[in-house]
Image 1 (cartoon, rainbow, N blue to C red):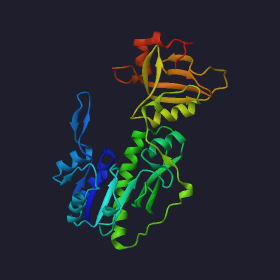
Image 2: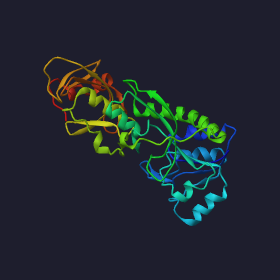
Image 3: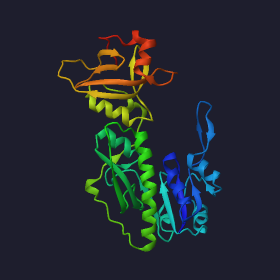
Image 4: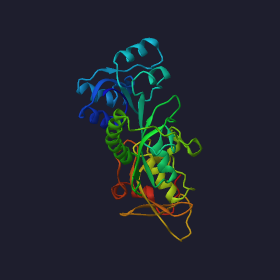
Length: 311
C-alpha cells in the first residue's frame, strides 16, 4: 500500500522503520514543526523528522491540517492510508476521508481504557497489571474510533514509563504490519468501542511528580516509575529538590511516620509513608548525575540522618 506516515516522538520511529522495511511504500511523512530544546533553546527537529530525512523521505511539518491548501497537498499524494503514531496534530474530517482505507492510529493502551495523551503513565499510576497496543480506525473523536486489532502486554513491578514505551513501540510496529495486511485483504473490520468503559489519560504536568509521603509506599513507587523518564519524581530535603529515579516499596508492621528517614545505608535510603517503607535506590542532586543511593551517601551522608523529615 501507499502510505502517509504521521508521527512525532521517538515512540513513533520503530513503526516508521518497520514500514520502510516492509513491502509498503511510504510516500510522505508528516511531523510537528521543529521546537526549541535544551538550555540554548536551539530549534530541534522531531525524532521522526530526523529518521525520515536520514532515509530520504519527503517530510512535511505543518502546524495544522485545517487549511485548504494543505488538504489539497495531502490529497495529491494519492495515499491508500494514513498511519498516525503520536502525531499530536488534529486530523480533520476532510483528511480522514481522503485515503482509500481512511486513517488508522496506533495507541499504547487497551482502548477504551486510557484514551488521551498519557496512557502509559496513567496506567502505571493506577497500578494496572497490563497495558497494550490498539490499532484503531480514526474518527473525529479523541481516541474514540473503532478497534481494528489489539494486543495485551503484562506490566511488571519494575516497569517504568521509559521501559513500557520501548515495549509498546516495538509491539505496535509488528501489530501495525499485521493490521495493514488484513485491511488490504478486506478481512479486518473495526469494532466500536464501549464508551461506558472508557477512562481518560490526561496530560502529565510537572507538579504531579512531587512525592507526597502521606501516600502509601506502593503508590509512591508507582509515581517514581510513571514519571521516569519525565518529569522525574522528586522530594525536598533542606530546601533542595532531590529527584528520585528508582525505589522499592517494603511492607512493615512497625509504627512509622510519613516522610521520616528510618535508615540510610548501602541498601538504600528508607523513608516512612502512610503504609510501608519506600526505599530510595537511585537519586539525583541538582546539577548532578543520578547515582545509586550508596554513592550519594558516601558524599552526602549528613543530609540523610535517621529521624530527619523530608517533604
